Length: 131
Image (cartoon, rainbow, N blue to C red; front, side, top):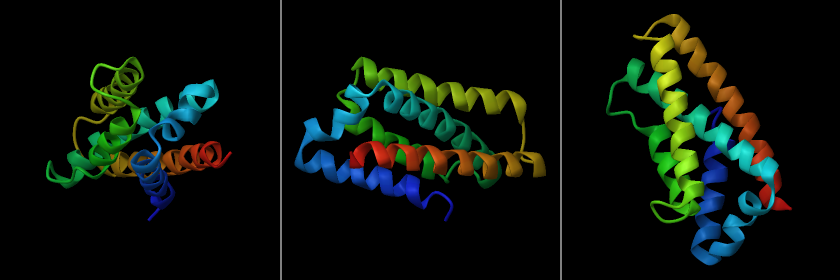
C-alpha cells in the first residue's frame, strides 16, 4: 500500500512509453535531478527486493518486476542510462545483503523504511513527469 505511488509512476511510464517513447524519456534525459532521483529509486528497489526475497521467499519478485518495467522504458539492453540503473539496483541489493544476512525484525523494519523512501522518490519523479 505504501508503494502505490511508486507503482503509479511505473504505470505512468508504461502508458507514456506505449504512446510516445520520446515523452517517456524526456524527464530522465533532460533533467539531471530527475535522473539522479531515478538512480536513487533503482537503488531503493534493489535493497527492497533483497529484503523482500529474504523475508518472503524467492517467489516474491514484486520490486524486481517493477524495476524491469522501468528499465524497459529506459532503452534497449546496453543503453548507458539503462546500465546505470541496473548498477544502482545491484548496488542496493548488495548493500542490504551485506547488512542483513537473514530475515529479522530489523530487516523487516528496514524494508518499511525503504518503502517510505521509495514513495518519496516516486512522488518527486511523478512531479517531474507532470511538468
